[in-house]
Length: 88
Image (tube, helix red, strand yellow):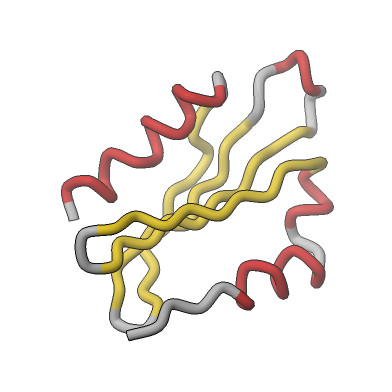
């Protein structure tokens, strides 16, 4: 769990952005975080990154979508995140 708590700041630092939110999630009994990051200004005022990170046994899985804020709440993006499955 400690590594998951460090992930929002680590991802934001790697991308040069700022953490807007980090929500605890669970997928198939695996802990994770859903993280929203404000991208650097060079990408535009409304450019953000939505990331889902899961800890499965000793592995970390990360998926990300980037774009304008209104795009990140679209059905397509939600379907993409919901399509990610972890096998037991």
